[in-house]
Image 1 (cartoon, rainbow, N blue to C red):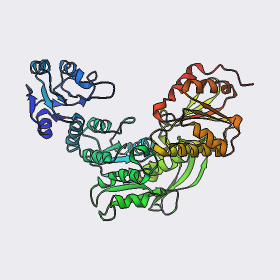
Image 2 (cartoon, rainbow, N blue to C red):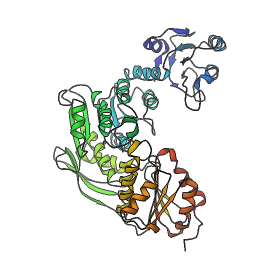
Image 3 (tube, rainbow, N blue to C red):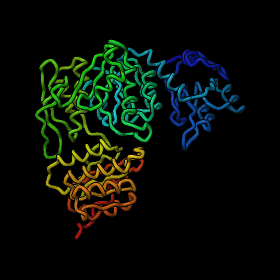
Image 4 (spheres, one colour):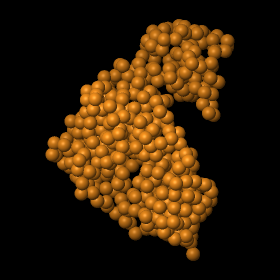
Length: 482
């Protein structure tokens, strides 16, 4: 960002507690961490669950903050320090909202197209695939990692330089109205919806409520010129169009999927021995290209089709789209393959989990024909509300269908995964239930010398990536079970 301090304070429209010594100074950074604040930046004081940013206002002023935004009244010592340092102080009811407004102001200076990506599963992978496809042709900025909330999205937008041509922003969602706020800030030109699943069911109450909340990204598109890329195989596709009034607003809609009725389709799908898909992508103009991904699993095909659709809309050739898709690497903790010195191989998919992504991961495991024993370490899925037991049970049935040699569950909810697997026919001696990570690691250790393929997946709060870290450092020397 490159904004004048006076422009920022004027846009926020609130009176300053302390005027800046240099009101026209240029501001190039805004954030909520006083440790990374640059001289002349904006410090947003946020009250978090563990850390209260208001306790660091003095630190930010000493670091050279040009503006401090606070929800609380400033202490006399902070006012005096601000005057000494020449900084401005602004009190407002919601500093997080103010942070978004600063990002909205910067969006008005950018001439790039903004592509918003949302959905219950596959948002981050799809975002990265889109970036890989578009980067050779455009100057691309992208939200980093999982910066997909009401702090991360504005931060990603503020990081975009003026020269950006395409800005790709991931939009997560926990409650109704959240995506609408993202769109107020980012003003997307193109929206991608990967699917409607059951993530955050506890918070929203029903799958229809989830779909309506996701459809807010469609509402945020400009009439007539807005571009919508939609998973045409998803059962909610038509309802999403209705919720977003896509037809009445003459939005440009492209559907992707494996069904022939879609605009961008995949056919001739097959997998190599490591579960990497190879398939033919066909485009609306009759052109086609064969693609082989570095990513694993059937679900990666749909994510790639979403990215291919965006590439097609942007005028790229099939050859350019193919190159971008094939160069996209796996992401950390998202089906990342980790080789252990013992010869065992891990599929680290520990970043997060919901029923759809769990079943997709098990499907991926089943497609890998490498001759190894297959083990799944599956933990609790959170935020599923009163249907949690039923949904965990269904994942267990999918685990049994995947032909596992061993199912190891972690956590109280995951015991229903074990129950579902047993009911679906997985033998009792192939099922182990544990209460925590330490017990799971101990139970898994004797199997590692058999050089298995191990899938590790759970909701982020369980932090099963620590099992991966432990295995990488200490999990190699265990003897095979007797």
